Image (spheres, rainbow, N blue to C red):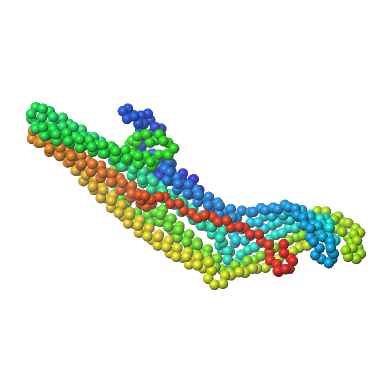
Length: 555
């Protein structure tokens, strides 16, 4: 699958992974005008919209998407090894040869050539065979008395084929590179899916953290207001002599402490907002840093957990990291297969054929050597072509070549290494399966325990609210003290914070349980790794047949 289409499918699929509350307003596509009193434009953001923005804009996810495209490009590069190669030569040469034969006496020989050659060669995608076809032509002038043509025109058609019979027949370096490039592309696509799951999980966690942080600001603001209200009441009582000044000092100290808590809560909310913003914003949209994010979705209700054992069994087949490890194991197996083949003897069938023709001005000589030129016969280029295709002067060869490494070879050592790597990959798969099973079972327990914690925290917040209201009424009729009311306010604020934390932990546990079924969590400080090996150019040879050494029959 092409990386671009894969990314589009993932983008449309991630929306189904979101925990969406019913009947929530859609997030605005454009930034609305600044809200009154804030001075910052606000974006009403649903969880689905936050996930969509992250999938489209997150730079780290874009890195992995581009890596998937690089993997597809590597496959294309590996395929180019089977492209036909065209070559052509056009040139001129001149040589003056000093006298070296008693037939020529002291006479030097001046020879001038115009020559050209055009050919095509190609590696076949099956069997590792190579073929070539070429056409050459030349025109030569010389003052040698030994020549029968001046000028002479020569042409030739040459065909060649080479086929390995043992080594390289089932697999060869080019096909091996292509297979490895395909497997690297598969790993890149799996890593992209894994990165999408991890990014979606991180966005959900950040979304609910921001939601809880904003709610905590509200709790701390309400707690400050209650402290200020109590300080006002105490001041009135101190002014009329119904309470000692110490009660006012205590109430004002409490106001200062809760104002500090509100400041901390506000800073934490701004940090949570920036964290979510970093995950979902487009880096080129600088104005997005100034926008205020308003998470409008509400936490979902209780979700019934599926059968944990069945979930674990499904996850062991679906987890992208396990799939990548299995793919690595398959790659190691392909390496073993390749090096096992490379240990075989290099036995090759070699065959070639050449048809030649000659023409030009033929010199007819009579008398003793070198003879006297008595006639000149002209043979045109058409005569040359006729000779070539009529096989008047054929040259062919058919045979086999054999080479084999004596002693331990590089391929044997490489095969031993590949077998160790395959065993390592198999153990990696087993290790990841154990880790996945443990993590999913732990996440399921976390969902159950946080649900129970939320129930307990909600009950505690309700009781703390009732206790505060009771203590406030008792204080108003003079049956309680400022200290007890302050303590009840603190307990109420803490109970509400505990409830918010329990709600956040429950939502976070749901997100983790969902994500762990497809991918492991991205630990703090981890970086998305890229993979893939580079393609090495393997030149396509030119089959030229085989001939007896010094036979004079070569090309």
